[in-house]
Image 1: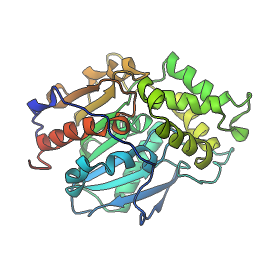
Image 2: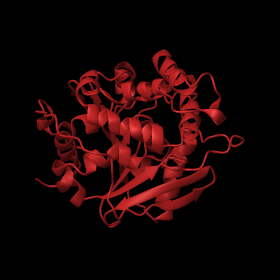
Image 3: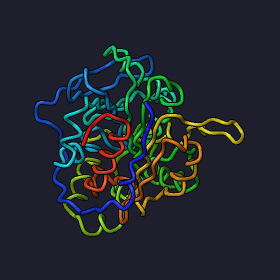
Length: 319
């Protein structure tokens, strides 16, 4: 199915919504799926007969804390009604997960990508999917699209860099992992400094300064609900990831792709650096003013409309 880039993607009007507490559906059921490189928790919203949207969250979050604000936003209701959403939590990243065994290496980014295929196989899904990934989750889905191009129709990458770790990211990761008085992963704790580093990566400066309720909600999530040793394990894996694209390799992602990021994204250069490695006939780039990486939480209205137009271009939904 050819992608028709909607003209309306330019000049999106945005508004700052009231963002409430993190939380998914009260009756949500998680299914644990075993893979050779770890156990995934998966939640399905919708009918598997409908077009499939697979979500993958950023480091420090799970599917609820990363996507519930968008999924529960009224403007996203029409989109959800026409899709089956499969939310994937990376191994050990569901709140309350047991500590990842120190003797077991955390999956590499390519292994996390392979696990998506295991989820699709578990549900006997053979049709091509759409992927929506935030931050590190976007890179997992990008790697899946490269490794399994016949299984991916399109990608929505939110604040996600397809590059290997740069010096800025390396510094953020080191600060977040080792700010608990130099302890190693096994004894790591979510200190105020480590939590602050995550919030700086997630949100723009104005959101951090003016939305205390949102900052308190994510501080509570990071500090009291997540297993920080597991966050540190994924950060270590993510930081050591190999470059997806090598100079002169000619590799190009054919999946129709929408890149969404904030004007205050801490890794804005990394996000747009490999823009030319995506098929120019099927890519759109949306920059939202005043946001960090989690544009979909800071300004869901600014994300809903481009996504709706993107899905119209793919023929998945109608006006």
